[in-house]
Length: 589
Image (cartoon, rainbow, N blue to C red; front, side, top):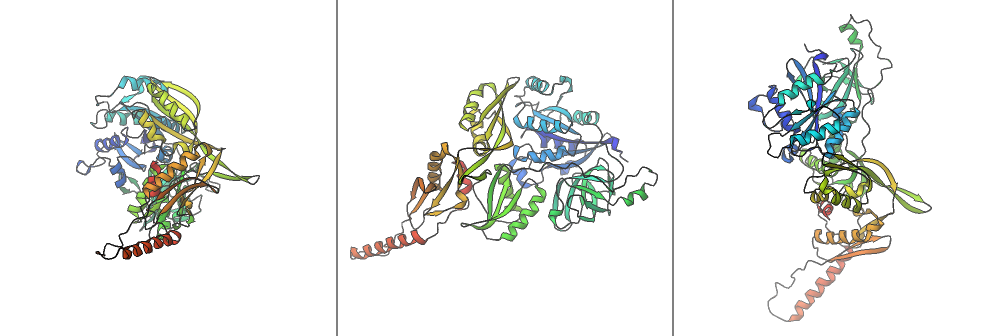
């Protein structure tokens, strides 16, 4: 029997591509959690999308046994768009392996994840990975870590997750350095840190048991939503669902709740049980606490979306789309959505995302997992609109921006930030690496900033950002008219200094993206009644005289005149066919 003194809960945090999933693979191999014949790369990455893109999108828990200890690991994503997954994982563990690539050193997301871990007072184990690579510079990375964490270099571990070198030493360090879980025997409280929906068994909650114990068959309740049901099953991840009789203090596992209403089981809620049964099971305990007045666990800070885009079903099946979004939100609590309608596309949903990659992943998951054919509009940040003295004013979101780059690129990076309306805050140095801190409008960095940053730094710079507040700026609403009709999903808020350049860029881009129709199409950008830019898409010419051979030219002229009149009519009454991928392609302008 494993006591809580022999349990260690930890996660792996790192910048994207620093080797988290590969290290998790070695843990599974060394501890024989997965048999060799069943082992594959990125074993804990369950989704096809994760394997195709080579990134972790969803946190994934697994229980492994090593030297008579039960180690509960949560593998986390590394991309900034999935930082909320990381913050949820950190709230469920006592320790974290901070994994750093020996060839790249400390990056922006390394710092961001470290800050998250330090706020949770976790035990940090710094590990340098990829030491087998020719480009590895261990001494340089050691200097960065020592300076960053203010620790002795003897506390740093070295590994090659690819070859397995040093992996056992990491597990031994987890046992020695990560504190065991604390918790009371009663009453029962468990934190829901993730969940999935099963069409047969209802909502399956992923939990960390903080206090007490949960048996299969217990009457469970959720403190926030007041939902009640029976625990149909409880168990651990090894790495697949493995049934257990009960989950106790310190365990990370799952509870099959049986709930069919998805909204009743929310990430961050506290799951508890009918503790009257506990007194019978543990009659020797005299200091049994009364469940009356039981306080919920802290839960999670409410996530705020960074960008918004609208989703529409090409088949017009709004109910199918709503059901799919509800189920996906259960597994992705950072996704938000609300119904809206568009003159162009009918009824759909305005959705909030943490970034462009998050938006792409949600779109692909909806199409793959729920068989939907979607139109996704051009993403934009959220603005606060206020009427001041009869005039509309806009407040835009600003972020704290942190850029990490080698010192030789500092001039180019600062120039890019200035062109993006960013305000300089400070410069810090870690070895030969520079940390530049700015405050910047989210709209200026969410779309193309990262690509430009990588380009000017030869791929060496990285960035992280966090929303701080909303500020008044000189912003105006720019409308896009196609064939004289205002297309609401293409309207956008633009800073006045960028107005003319944006207007010409978007009209030229739309001219290239919208296919020719049977009539001429005018594309215009306007503010109020003033046209700022215009492009014309010529009509597709149909050969209406091809069937005529010889004869009087007047016959052909009559057909040409008839065709011209038809085009004029279509220009007034026709509806422009806009391909569904136009909005995504507009991101590249």
